[in-house]
Picture 1 (cartoon, rainbow, N blue to C red):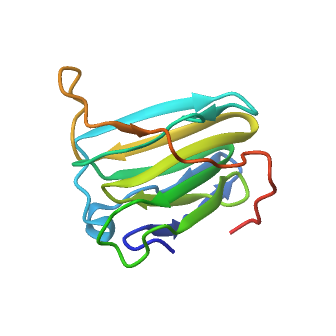
Picture 2 (cartoon, rainbow, N blue to C red):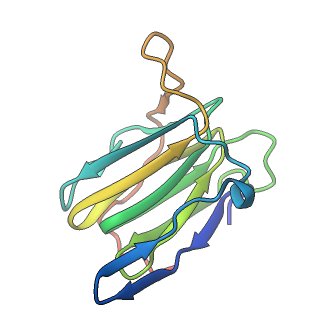
Length: 150
């Protein structure tokens, strides 16, 4: 696993009324969300396919709450013990997880099942005037290869 990446498997509690799933506890993650947003991707769509992206100041906490995604992380940090390592995670239905993505770790994802809904809890508000988003175009990844469930 890339240094600083954390994966918390989430428990779904079901009864005759529906389901409940706790996603994030500040006491467990150390992340104080400044903003929470939802994004979706239609089946087969890769968000950031051509250019993986990263944040210099922001930590992401990703959770796919509907559908399933392949989340790919690339450690591009110069002083990291895991520099160059790639993590492939299938998360969502059948494997609900909260994935904490540290600053400077490149990431992108592909929707594998239906329209996938992702909740992202971030520790810095998005600033339209000065976005903390950096795209890297020298990363090649084969989005069509099979990914083992992790």
